[in-house]
Image 1: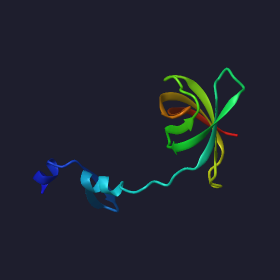
Image 2: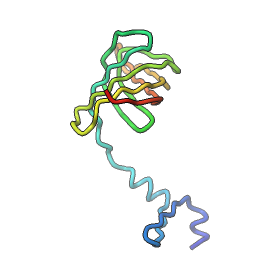
Image 3: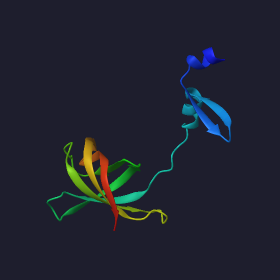
Image 4: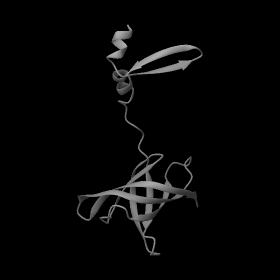
Length: 122
């Protein structure tokens, strides 16, 4: 069995002295579910401006926020996002982010991927 394990990428989990071997194919299959959509409103503003713009949240993770907005933003640009979720369990917050990519998805509509640099409640 060891020779089989050497040919397959795997993870070993130890739970109460019981070792479980999970092959990458098992791992990938466990990820084949639709993640719940995070429905939220985002307003974004540039650091040197008090004017804010409305966007729509597409995805939030621990390190990245993806949203749809009306501006093509340059990579490396720092912006402030105010995120208000429609989910009552999620606290509104402000995130200081850096634009990683921005691509056109429609007429005056862009999908912006950002990396979170800092977060605070508001």
